[in-house]
Image (tube, rainbow, N blue to C red; front, top):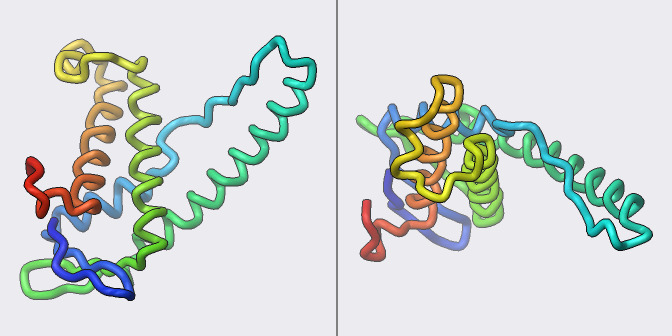
Length: 156
């Protein structure tokens, strides 16, 4: 995947057919884990009411992101161009895509038990949890390319 054009309308990325398929599958899985309820300090007497409002707001936001995730990877967003797929995305929707990818990474990391060392944790995972290790890494790779880090001297 690489950025091929950027202008006032948005971004245009070139993906291999496999990358396009992986992006559609990955974003289509959002959310990948259950929403963990937010907790507010127990010393705050109004904490329960604030927690309730916060969690309702988070649930509504997540529902909206899920709707946007489906729109981001609809087939019309991808156009065949030779041996590649061209993916066009506006500036605002690119930010939504980055948020969804980051949520997938963080949710997967939480399911894995929030490991400090990601390099060695893969060897200790059950088959069920390995899926989340894979999702976390693939989401990170797509974030990297959506941020165009490969064009700024980053590792690719």
